[in-house]
Length: 171
Image (cartoon, rainbow, N blue to C red; front, side, top):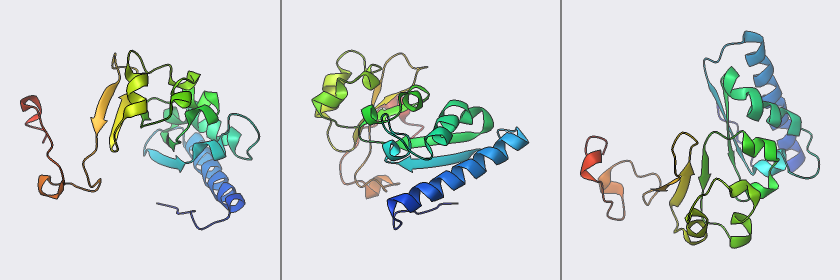
């Protein structure tokens, strides 16, 4: 189920998101089973779980970030500036994806996982290129999305994409 709240006033968006999240979380808690998994995608995460200030649904977003995975509720949050999001939400992120950002943002504490020269790279990333971090992998890795983003076949890609021989079976 996809719920598009883009046409709603910001207060109505909070109400809809809060109501849905509370309902999903209570239902998953009562069943106590992680399956089927539910994926919740929130854009502009700082609106729902701000680092400073108040949000009527901040507590439920924190609950999902901290306990949701064990119940099968997966939070996918998108935010251009992680420094504006509640630190416990960021700390409980299993996977972090970073696009191009300005130098003041990349120096904030939320990006300490970017080791070596990845902080510098994050300032200069080209469109469609991201840095992916997952704690089980010892170093962040660069990933590139083809243009256009919806391309699913090599014939739809507008640029040459190099696929190493090692990945021949996955192309």
